[in-house]
Length: 204
Image 1 (tube, rainbow, N blue to C red):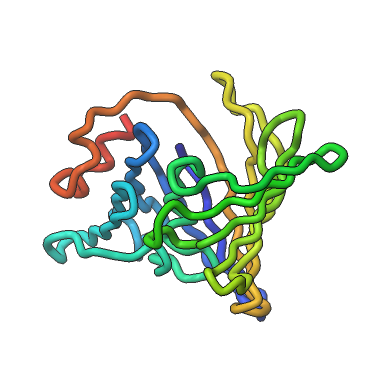
Image 2: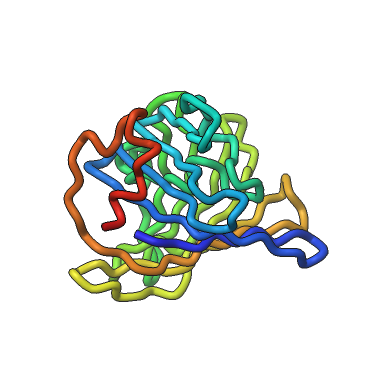
């Protein structure tokens, strides 16, 4: 899977990243930065709630947290390396309103980046439209907006654009644009610390 991440600052300045990602099961993901040149070759690994960052020529991968951001901007590491919501959250309330489902989700443990999510889902496509992310004290951290539903082929239909803004970062905006998504089976060895320097091999 390929995606572009764009951070937009209040003055309109943009910084763009091109990222390749591979995923297995519900709890394994690796990411490889392809652009810009200053980030090229960096890789991240997520195994459940554990995350690492690999920087070429620096040595062993370093631990990172879900609430940090390796790219800056409004998206944190958990947003960029998103697992299935059912892996991290339980539905505690569900309501139907017109064409939408309104879901309240609660984190399964305190290592998850957001304690509570309020999610609007399209009833027909069962894809998210909007997600509000809250802390355990009910403070709104950010809102995610899912846009431009797209058929990527192989039965994959999902929003191709995710935008986010946060009251904690007024004037800032971050966008993810999904490009090519190709179903592929990867070996477990692809999702290990020792393989972070060779993530580019997964693109073949």
